[in-house]
Length: 322
Image 1 (cartoon, rainbow, N blue to C red):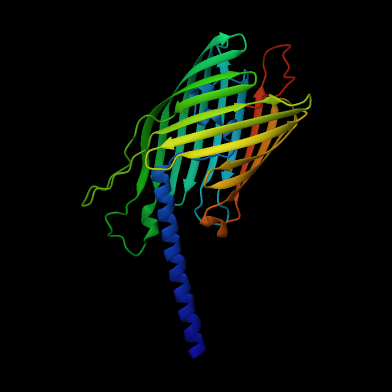
Image 2 (cartoon, helix red, strand yellow):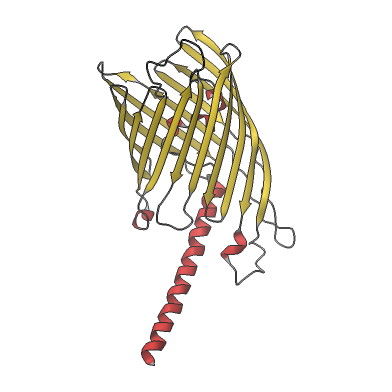
C-alpha cells in the first residue's frame, strides 16, 4: 500500500513538473515571436524572395523554391516553418513578379504570411543589374494562449488571438552580377498591433520592423571548383542583431558542400546538389550552441528548387548559385 502511494505521488509530481516546463517553454517561444517574428533560415541564400522583393525575376526564369524547416527537433512546440516562393521576369525582363507564402508555427502561435512582390530593374553596366522592389500582403496571426493554462481561465493577461489580419508593405534593393550580389530590404514596414484584451488589463503586441542585409560572391578557384562565401544580417527592435555567415564549395557545378555559423547560436552543415542546371536540392543541419542543445537533436532544413525555361531554343548550361 505504501509503495502504491509513493508511485502515485511520484506520478502526480512528474505530471506537474512536465506541465510547468511546457508552460515555461511556451512562454519562451512567445517571447521569441514578439522580438524576432519572422522565421529564420539556414539556407537563406536560396530563399531571398521571402525577405527582399527586389529579387523577383533575377533568375531569368519562372523559378519555384520550396523550403521546409524543423527547428530544435525533440522539443514539443518547437518552430516549424514551410515556405513556397514563385517569381519570374516579365515585360522585356525589366520587371519581375513574385509570390511567397510562409506558414510558421511556434508553440501556440501560428502565422500564415501571403505576399506579392514587384521589381523594376536597370542595368548600370553590361554585366550588372540594380533592382528596386515592392512587397505587399498580409499576415494571418493566431495564438491559442488559453490552452497554456486550462485550470486558470481568469487571468486577463492570457487570451486567444483568432485569425487577426495584419496587412503590410515592404521595400528592397538588390544589386547583382553573374558572380555576386548584395541586397538591403525591410519586408514589413508597418508595425501592426495584435489583438488586445478589452476587459481589464490591456496587453499590446506589435509586429516589429525587420531589416535585412545580404551579400555573396562566387569565386572561380579552378575550372571545376568554385567557392561562395555569403552572409545575412538581420536587425529588429527588441532583439540582438542576428548574423549568419556561410561558405560553400561547389565541385563541377554539381555538388555543393559547406558550413554556416549563426553567431552565438549555432553551427550548420550545408549540402546542395544540382540534379540538372535547372533542378536543385539542398539540406542543412544545425547544431545549437545555446543551453537548448541538451534538450533537442538539432534542426533540419530541406530545400527544393526548379527553374522553368519557356523560351524556344533556350537551355540552361550553367546553374545559378544565388
